[in-house]
Length: 199
Image (cartoon, rainbow, N blue to C red; front, side, top):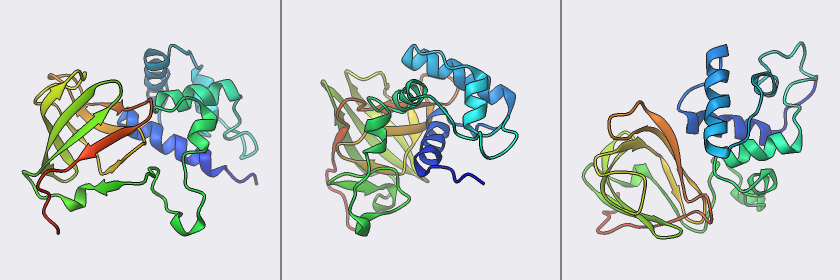
């Protein structure tokens, strides 16, 4: 039996987070192929995606096999420059190994916030949003400068890590159906936390 690469498991999980759904049915793969094309202008076949998820594999030997160009497209979909950038995102220090996908010199989780507390998130070239925490990993945009996110938009996010792309799930934007969104594809984000209480 062929052991699946940890990077493949990570990218599948991250793609599902960005897409806002588990990729399990033929319809899911159709939707994913369209969303990858919309975001990257690269068309991956549904059969390629199904093979990568092991959906059509006859045995474990074929699961996850993919060309580098296809892996580059998947990495671009979740906010990385290419597959190598995605694979190199982790800290190599064994003492810092964790299942968390996001690493940076500075990070914080939603657990540190009480409902009503705010934070500011910025990314290149001049994007800035102010968020108010609602509880249960849910945030609302209360100010937005030069960002596609609008005041009143909501989303779920548990981890904020500086110098890493910020992956938002279940984004509700101006009444549209929930979707995924990535902030800071180029260089990641930085954040400020005014008046955060210690919990």
